[in-house]
Length: 314
Ligand SMILES: [Zn+2]
Image (cartoon, rainbow, N blue to C red; front, top):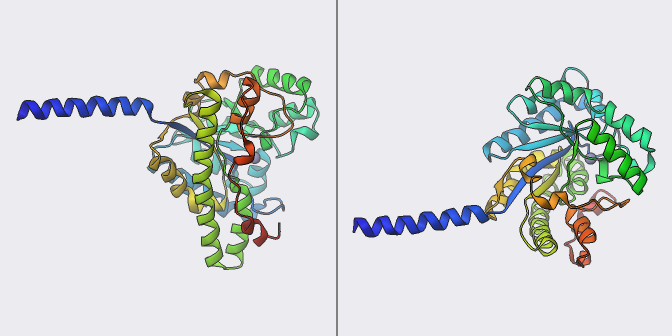
């Protein structure tokens, strides 16, 4: 009996071991720190408490779900929420060991900037993350462009890529997103109107759409690469994610994903695929498809429900 049990346990262990090796993996990234605003107006000092709360809740969820995460900072936003809140939010990330990356100083579209202006934005976007990371004995390593616009011409792309490398940056790609910014604007509006019922509906629609997009991008990337590579999820530091982050992380857990650090994900050879030059900001699965000459059906990607945008008049 004991021997049978040991044999059964051994089979179970080896099965779970094999299963663990095949588990899909995802690195979590959060853009527009310290606060991805739901309206076009600039962030001000009056947003300091809200920004602090958003980041506190996000970090609590990442700890609870054992998800290493990288936050990408617009230093201009950190300056606009003022001292000391701006710097405090960034230190709240680095003190417990979370990473920060450069998302350029302002959130300008690099397609409209010259190479020199982009380089200026990178340098101007660095001091506060450098300071927050230095306190944890680290340096800035990752950079993500606003709108994932990595350079709309080959000349600009290559010049900026070379500049980034000299400053010790690696480009942070992302493979899954669910247009959280498009749900966040109506969500903030519903909360402002004290329309709790609509807010709850928007939140549910966002989580459902995220589930559909996780499945879509997992399938897309597997088709393009012929295997499962680690994913990188793109979220924003928004009120919506303050209220939905645990549900979003649970979606990955329900699908058997393991959370990993961004640098671990980027070790996969998929991320060494030569970059395609584009003026758009698609997820990396679409870029890989173009680079590798694989035909994909982008028109089949799930669409976010129209009523969500209509609520905010857009
Ligand atoms: Zn952004």
